[in-house]
Image (tube, rainbow, N blue to C red; front, side, top):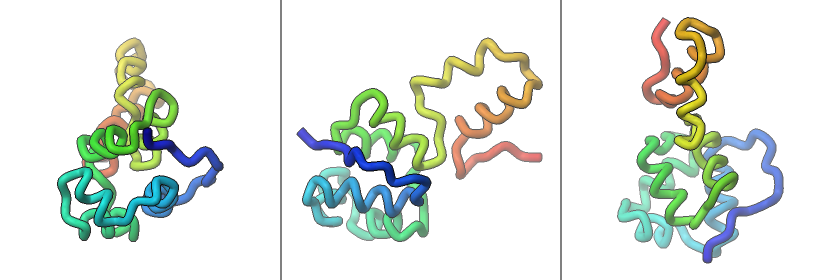
Length: 116
């Protein structure tokens, strides 16, 4: 079963973190791409920081790496998304509260952030 690297990468960009996770599995970029059904250039662009995966692509990465619970949440946080397991937290917050707005913006992700 695939494992997630346990060492703390601090606030390393998603691409650098993805490289560490992939190398821990001893997978090439091509092998990871094949597991996901993508071209190798997509994995290269993620790793080089040219693009971030979309939320549904993060879900596919979580599945490919066999991440569970806390490790699965880390994939979402690293890519700039609030993990799906935490989406319900915002429902009980006052509509205009700063924290509710921040969670909603993070839920939207980096490609669809809140507009000013």
